[in-house]
Image (tube, rainbow, N blue to C red; front, side, top):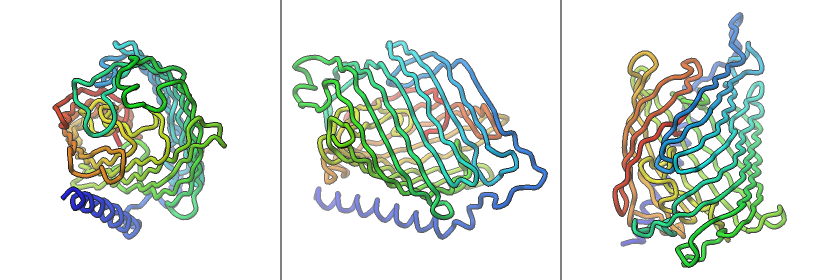
Length: 379
């Protein structure tokens, strides 16, 4: 029975991704970006927003800090290229967590080159329930980590809306403070001592989204692998594989149905902070990020976005997913699901940069829930 459910799950995911990608290619003419510069139309090339930030998530509780968003174009006459963006933040939470990060996407003229990047430092008291899809609430154990993280993704257009890319990822775990003899030792968790990883990989991307922050048309399909090896200076040898499919459909006027199917897989000796991490503010909202950890993960989620009035909008969302140490474990046994809703406030209506407030419930071995204040959409 378990084998039959697993086969059905895999066939369902494959058919969803293949048919959706085929639909994207077939409908590429109906999801149009402007093809020619608009004469005499001048676009604002730079926009800077800096504001004090009050945020909340299950992982951090309330946090305060400073956030900045910088959007720009290289050419004010260029309506073909999407707006580039850089976001920076520094947050300190009531749980004595500190995060400083810079991330963004730069679209070079004609989108011939796209650069994604993220640089961050975290000093983060966190929680751990063990490994795998069965992680009882009473196993909760506190630990703290300090980490530097660098992610660079260089993409080159090879044809309309299709990009080939080169990825580099570096992570340095400075320290892990955990309970000796507890879950980390019992599970023999790799990476419970200071380490660093370094790896490179390749990607292939189809991207017809019409906006960088909150698209209402188009789709996105990205597959990539990233190999970590002592040859790159890594303490661990393993390979990470990811497939990320998203579709944005305008249902009625400005109402949008957003869908994401996400698979995260690892092979080899995977350290703690590179395991699949279930939950968080962007995936399976309502679950603590890391509530379930394992080598592999599959998540399918959908969100319905509705404009209300002035700068306000509302959303409803649902999610379904699971984790497992083997791909065969990604079945309907102990399946997890979540749902919730939220409000949106457009900080920059032209670029569709939103402040979001979400409340989600997660259902696994028990029920969890949480409130999120975040900048930008979940996906």
